[in-house]
Amino acid sequence: MQTYSLYELNLLVRETLAQSLSHEYWVQAELSDVRSNSSGHCYLEFVQKSPNGNSLLAKARGTVWASTFALLKPYFEQTTGQAFVSGIKVLVKVAVCFHELYGYSLSVLDIDPTYTLGDMARRRREILQQLEKEGVLLLNKELPMPLLPQRVAVISSATAAGYGDFCHQLTHNPHGYYFHTELFPALMQGNGVEDALLKALDAILCRQSDFDVVVIIRGGGATSDLSGFDTYLLAAACAQFPLPVITGIGHERDDTVIDSVAHTRVKTPTAAAEYLIDCLQTAADALNQLTERLHAGTFALLTGERRRLDAFRNRIPATVLRRLSREKTSLLLMRQQLVRAVPLFCTRQRHRLDLLQQRVADASPQKLLARGYSITLHNGKAVKDAALLSDGDRLETRFAQGEVVSVVCSDANDCCS
Image (cartoon, rainbow, N blue to C red; front, side):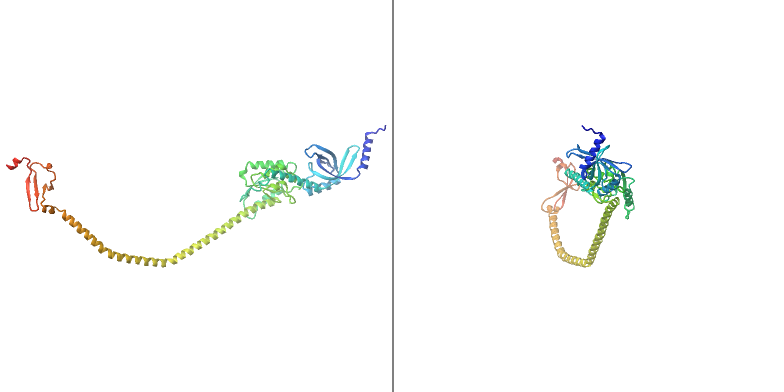
């Protein structure tokens, strides 16, 4: 029986693999444990997970030698806008290698960025579809933009050039509009982007009434650092945020997920500032139009009223003449009526006086006395009740012709004597 040393066996494996797998192969896999050393070599692992879970179906060690990595990495990141990091899916051309000491590995020779772009697009579509299914995809877009978005909550890195450009553009806008901005610092590149942005959004939410809009801006960073903006949690938070979200993260070629759910997406931080300035300018233009309409309407109204006054003024002389003529005619008619009415009135009143005179004459005491009646007076007053008289009272009795004086005596015998 032939016996081999471990080295000899590994050498045999190497030779066998070199003969059997001498070609180059395009392999689909997910990157894992990506790291590079000072020599410029990149060491990583390729993994394949089960379709319905995260259990590993296959794993292989990979190497990108420095000469290849120096070209491959910038090409991939510039094309995809995605960092060459763990967790992304790639299509790579590899050669199968076996080393007596280090064992089986795949040597990366080339990469197809379009495959990764497709996978990234698929992930974005899946996130957007999930948000649409939950009914929140368009919530932020449907918020009304404030008429004057002057209180701005800014999420950015304090040292980012884009943040400085944004503030400078607002402060030195040609119209002199005032903006109040407050920075909520956040990491805008690297693996901590999602957590940093979520914390900043939470901080703004606690002070929601202090702001009109939220602006997420990024400038000066590599396009390969945009993967942090393509996450479900961040997209859901932006989509459901109660203030309009404006994004300007400096990615012109393609939209990130938060670009798709934000109220307004612009290309750069400067463009975000220009958008806010344009909002105020639009409001100012509308106000100017209303002012012009007010001036024109006021002028037209005053002109119309002036014409009406002129018309009234011109109508006054003729109206006065007609009124005077009408009143003069009325006075003449009244005069004629008065002339006719006064004699008739006097005749009627004279007849009434005659009747009254006759009634007075018929009711006079002389008339009654002439009929045989008499009147007895006591102290100048007519006596109506004999019981009111006393013995010795002196009475005057008047007749139609003459009068008699008598004295009251209650005892007839005394009166006779």
